[in-house]
Structure formats: structure tokens, C-alpha cells
Length: 217
Image (cartoon, rainbow, N blue to C red; front, side):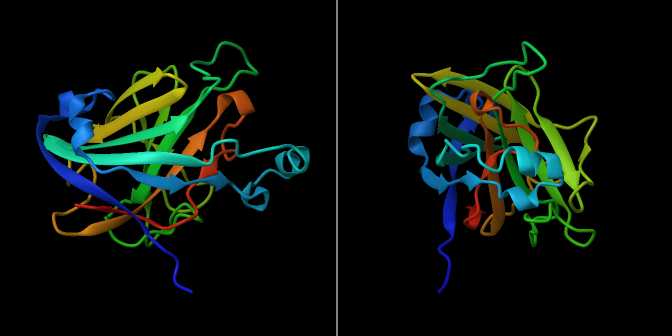
């Protein structure tokens, strides 16, 4: 049976990227919302045997969905992730405190994706990653599990807002070289991940989107 693909339509707006970075900007009301189901990452995909054993009988995956909107404005592309967080973890205040976070993963060349293995030498992936308490997102590339590299410089921006029990995080950057490799009239596979600090999630302990998703311009 064919698996349904979650389509995320990029809406063209006459607004600056700076304007779209505001999670509560009125322009977001002109975009289409896609509901993306997310599940806990299977323990057998985590490289640490200790983590697999210690989390075997612990509850995971309190967050079951992330709502996604996307807009192309003057200057690039903005993607807003919205999810429930009744107990927000806003920053790292101690060694055993973990912040809320989210990420968006896509093929670095805009082509094929191998998300389960974090890419490959033939099909590398790129990720835009936000973590509560930071002013800048992380941009990473990978060619397989254990190969993640963080870019020292990048054009991606982020703005986050928590209100009434929900996070709204906007990740934005240019379209094309150095940013999102998405061309007009085409679609590109994309995946999402969310970390709940209150649930002590970090690193590979997260919820992710197992169902295929496509960003379409």
C-alpha cells in the first residue's frame, strides 16, 4: 500500500524575510498549515547501548505532531514549526537540564534523501537546527550516522516564541546556493524533529517524522 506523503506548500508572499521571521506575523495567516505526525526515534537506531538499555522502559514521545507552514518572501524562504510544550524548557541552567529544540532536514543538493541514515556520501543531507536559549540556529551537514559537521558560518536565521503552551519557531534562509536548494515548480523531501527538554530528550532521543514529507514551491 502506498504511503501518503505530507505536502507542505510554500506560499509566495510580498513580505520581507525579516518580517516573516516573526512567528506571530500576520502574514503567516495567509499560508497553508500541514500537520506532520512525529514518533519517538526507535531505540535500536541510537548508537549508545547504555542509552538503549536505560530508556527501554521509560515513556517517550509525548509530542505527537508538529504543525508546519512555509513561505517564500523577499530574500528567501521561511519555515515555521509549531508544537505543544506545556512545560517549556527555555535554556540550559544546569548540567542535567535540557532545552527544547527542533530541526528540519533536507537533501543538501535538493535531490534524493536518505534521512534514516543521516545521508550518505552520494546523497548528503543538511539540517537547520534550533535550540532554546540560543540566538542563532545550527546548520549541519552529514553523509551518514556519526558524520555530522556544524557549519562555522551560514546565512540561516531563527526566531522563536512560546505562548499559551506552544512553541512557534521560524527558520529562514536564502533559496538556492548556501540556503534551501528548492526550485520553483518542484518539490523536495524534508523531515522534522522535535526535542522535549522536560522529557529529558537530547541528541538521538527525540521525536521525528517517519512519514514522507515534501516541501513544494
